Image: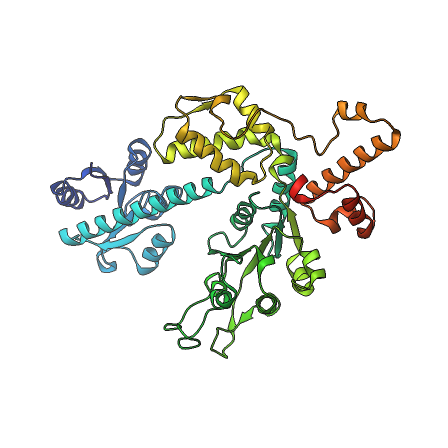
Length: 463
């Protein structure tokens, strides 16, 4: 079906000429002799394209455009007018029309070729805009943060505070908790939202290549450098760069990143020319960078430059109330993407999913839900369709169960069980960051390490 086109012009000859040109090509054409009549047709019929005369008695084209500014992004407006000598629009009026959202300008009398080319260009441009908007909505939905638990509410509050600023952000948390989603949410909420978001996985790039990836190189700067390469920092100019797993970056590269943060300038490999960049840096890690500093594998000065706004993303076991929402979100996403029939989850199955200890966090849950959508035979997923989970269980390692208390023979045993559970709970809360946990519970780090050894607490066993 071809688009519907509205022509607003006070000259009957122009309206008739435009109708003849457009209807011959199969377009559905509407006409209006005044601005008021044209606005009424726009509200009633919702045309796909609009030709608008600037010079008209009563409500002129400029006033019509002012009243249509809320629609010009979806409905292209093409301005038509005679030259100034014949009472047409002046250059300033034409410029004003473009400023108000008009896509193009053609002179009277309109030629057939000019009209048809203008229509095709406007329709193709509008189709591309619509596709881009749809893709952006799909991307935002794919990377949306799902859940309404108190732990996630704290993350959202931190995002809302950090996003509008230019501050560097350090996101920390276990693998699979959704650190990338937080980084993207910060970018979307910033003044740089319309600029590039460039992601770099520091753990996935070999040490010998990461400097070239980040800062670029000139042709011939090393063996294999057959062309100039623009680095990720330059690609992110005016936008945001997300340095994921920054704890895996070499000390040499850390020094260069620190310089970019401090000076907002860089040099490509093989060049002495300084290149200015305006980049917001968001970094993420699943490591305890303070411990890495003590081991000598991470620069302390870089840590303080990155840690301006720290955001901790809690593991899934600390936001179990979000699991049902996440399961439904992933289920809807995968059924829609793969054209499957929508599946529901029984209350028993959902409870078993909620109680499971997801060591891989949201990433593991997402992959598991995808498997269920593909492999479960019925329209409803039940307990029998949950391979590998076993019976529903409550993760009791963070809190001593009542019957465990009752089995204790002495007060000291009771104290030990309670103290161990308290320490595991706090370590989980702070992502197994020893320094932060020790500070929170008001004990020296050395004492906390002794307790970990005493109770044989480890992230591998209790994480």
